Length: 124
View 1 (cartoon, one colour):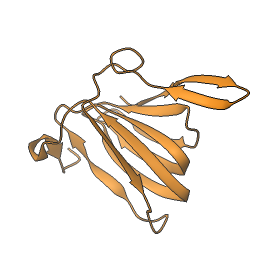
View 2 (cartoon, helix red, strand yellow):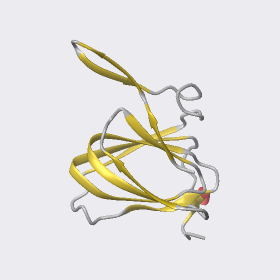
View 3 (tube, rainbow, N blue to C red):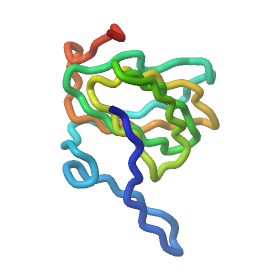
View 4 (cartoon, helix red, strand yellow):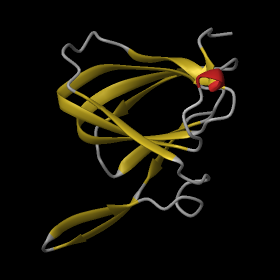
């Protein structure tokens, strides 16, 4: 089940430093990093899949977006607006990212290397 987690944020007079360490701050080793940006229209949807084994942490570095998450048990909508909060997604979480606003940049930390066979494109 997806859940929001607050990231370690070190603040001082020089600004903020946000830290994420694999297997320490999040429950997986980070094997892949990618990001989405330049989404031309808030109605554009990204994602639309789940995974066999990949876990992910989504962090809104700039701007905001919504993530619709469905499992067999429930449906949740998460507003990602702050760069010191991340959304932890489990493999079974069907996810659709939408409503990208204010030049959004969405960083994704993944537990697995890219493998097309890991993607499941059907909701159920």
